[in-house]
Length: 171
Length: 345
Image (cartoon, rainbow over all chains, first blue to last red; front, top):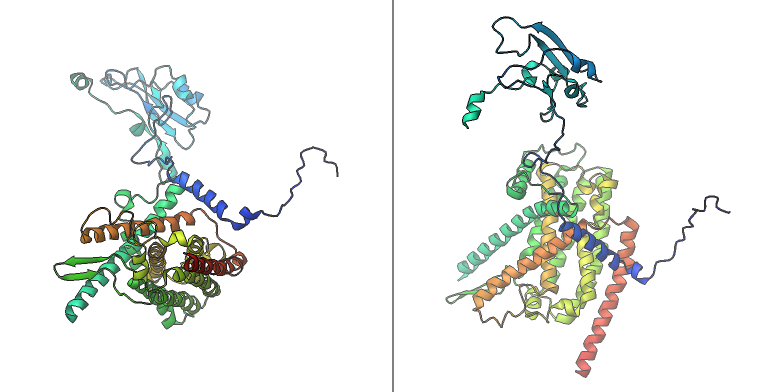
């Protein structure tokens, strides 16, 4: 029958010739292929000992930043929560009390700030939306856990640790 | 003199035994490593540097596993199976000449446990016994898959023993002796190696040796894709370990046989031109012999990770319709060449 697509291939089974029938040349060909692979460079990365370099704009776990005096930058404006396409961010705002000026930069701050890491898609829109440069996705991977509730990260995990800037200057 | 002789042989037996077991142990690691490299990955490398402790871990794991003897199994034969397999695997190394003689003062020590003048026949007898371990184990398991594996093992090893024997007959026609020690001694230097006079016989011998060791591409007795685990489906714990161990020991011994019969054993090129003392030549000879053995073990594994398994009818056709006629043709050819040599030169 005429092939409509012109791509029909008729498979014909020829009887094997002498060299194919004695099978040895095919074996040696196969052996040479496996030997080539024997000396090839192994692409495996031995993970815990070797870590592949991250891209410069890799987006990992969020961190809430402090300013140069160690005060939290976040003012709980809610723009990050608004911009979040996965609706992973919630927060509760509070007013700064007297005597807390060394803790919070603005008069309003986030008393509760939670990101659900199971919802988060690490798109980075929150860091683009933030007017105070308070949130960055500059951490490493979010690690595995056993319970869903443990993936809701609060301020204890998100706010970057306070460090003494005067000590940094000495080193 | 008698006690000294016995002591000497005892020490030699223990040394050979230890070396055999250690090599079999590390063959398991080498197999997995080589498999890894040929598939572009590292093999096991977590236990010790480069996984050097892996065989020890595997061995101790075998000892601590639960030992299950199926309710319907014939208990005595079920236990006998792996025992026979490992014993026959171990005793076949007795007649292999590991080196020439060492001389200390006026005592000479031969590095061959038993110089039997029918060494080749002895090896054959032991190989023929070896299949009983697999057969008994498979039959005593009272499991259809095990029985299938055992039947396959029996018919395969009988079929390929014929090819093996016929390929060796041509070799014996050339060497004129059944003693492995003498066969190796005849091949001194490089040009006297039997591989040059018996290339076809060597190919037949290698193919049959693969089949006798139940190695890929002839591992039909334990063909996982069809028979679960073949003859050792029901085996667990160290009994399974013994079966696996006997397979690796068989591989080691048949590598040693190939090296001794066809590749000059402990002989190496220019061995008499170096001007070394006899003891040094013996020591280097032993090392060379082991290098050859390791090369053959590597070849066994190389083949394993290259070729797929034969179908059963292909296996039988290869054994009966290809290898045996080829081996007979080889015998005839060898006879004609010997006749021409004797009459005209």
